[in-house]
Length: 494
Image 1 (tube, helix red, strand yellow):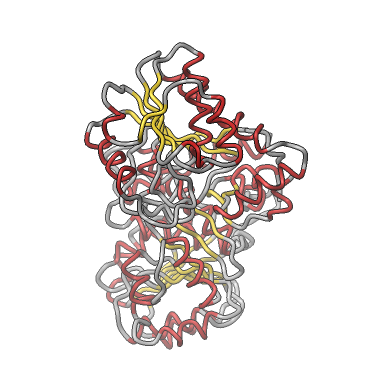
Image 2: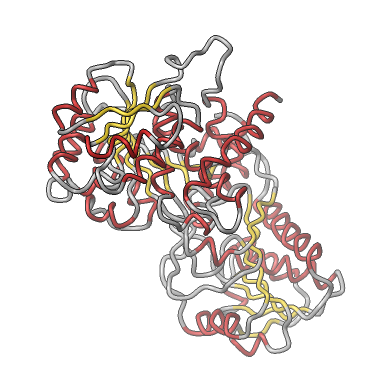
């Protein structure tokens, strides 16, 4: 694992517990870790707010211990501090008890009344591994923070948000800032936890980076550090055939889908792109752009004929193809031979009644499936959070699964996964998914492995949309790719 990949690593709740334990084994005391955590939170608060009345909400575990440190340090900095504790001070244990003993101020019962007069709240009630919904005074206080619109700083995660899934267990405060430690957790990137966490700052509290090698994380935040080393930059010796030849199955009516995918595949570097077009639509496809190749294909048998040319090394089936037997046959044909494949949209829906047929054909293939939530539900019966569902589906079908959304998840059969976080809301526009499928296709055609291709395509998709800004339509995305790729190339040369 490179340093760049290590920086993008996400740790599950259990892995973070292990990181704490490994830090202690390396000579960093748990008391030091807690003190450093409190200092980091205090520093972030002082950087953002002038002194004001603050209520620190402490729970009965280590998060509460962090809260005691924050309260002590803010009080020493001259802030008026109210400390509210869930439960009895005498029942605290370990480092939490030690830091409670260092607090010389009053401790009030945790409840909505503790918020009276507060202009800032520090939420240190529950940690990332909370297993059940907050109840009683804890829930009432969390709800009061939201009802009063108080600025809130979360410790590790907002109380009530599970660190692995981002799910809200009953209630959680809406934080402006969350300070977490060593590495983020999946719940910081998955909705709704991502929205409730606000700005997330990762603080160094003294855990050695070397513990990552022992933990061996398999989940990352998606970013160039995860795949840039494998990106297929053009070489001086390249020509159009060495850059890959992408084949796209075009539909007869919704022709825009394949055209968007074709332009994206070209923009991301594919040397050649052919659209397999129904005869009646050849003229429309041919007028799309100079350099786009179009072949008339009347049925699945003729599509198979195009696949006999081994130079067509990556194929996309689905966008605008229609839900019917021809699409099903073309999808299965795409999964033969040595070529890479992308199955999207209708090419997934056609297997709704027989997902085992698709999964059987996928085994051992270099393939990326790109469903949105609705298509995913039609094809798979997995339940749970998005990360859990995508990983389970990838393991079952033997292909890389790109589960699209505001928090897209890319998962592989061997358990690796990445969560994307750079998609702007402007991507909620017709055709954006077709562009994404074309980006994946173009990178596969250039020899990129499925996981890295899907991760790179998803990140580029978001970066190009962000670069365009408001007013985005799907056709704008590919046109912004050159500038995004240009910036990446500068990073690559450093």
